[in-house]
Amino acid sequence: MTIVLVIIAFILIAYYCGQYSTEFNMLRGFWETCGEFNKEAGLQIFSFYIGDKKNGKYPAYLLMIDSERNMLINEPVRFDLSNTHGLKTDGCRKMKMKFANIDTDILPNTIDVKFYPETCKLVLSDAKKIYAVFFKNPVLSEMERINSEPSSSNMIDSIKGIFIKKKCKKENKTKPDEIIDVE
Image (cartoon, rainbow, N blue to C red):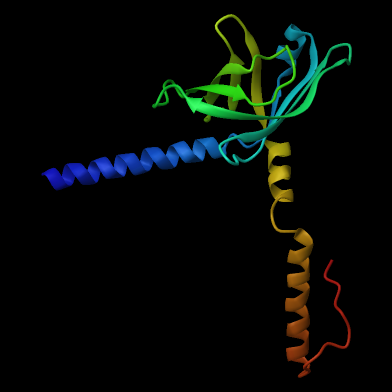
């Protein structure tokens, strides 16, 4: 009976750690406020890019432009996250975000974060104010991820190599007479 409980506990811990890791990987990408939030806040654009965690910190970029097209924030930042609640409640992970190098009075250095992985929503707030309600932009996030993958030109070169080898084999040659353009 004890062995069964240990196995069940191990499975639950492994599941929780896997889910936790997957959710935090979802933070990477481009986040934007919606038009309704922007209108209410007097903004034209409020975007937040979050990169992969390195050395305990997330590299990020904040861009905020008001409705009169004044640049309010336009800077790279770094932050760390601390999980204030071990478990996710109501589909939400509550955390503290601490900026290492933010140079603005618009956002505090430490801010509460509510992360909703199922709906790709990120809320930055404190006890008095909601600073942003971001939604992940899947198109920009995926394009950024594709650009960070091995070069597509390398893939095309590999495909060209396959076609050249097949043509040589078909014609009983060891070297191709011409380079085949597969584009």
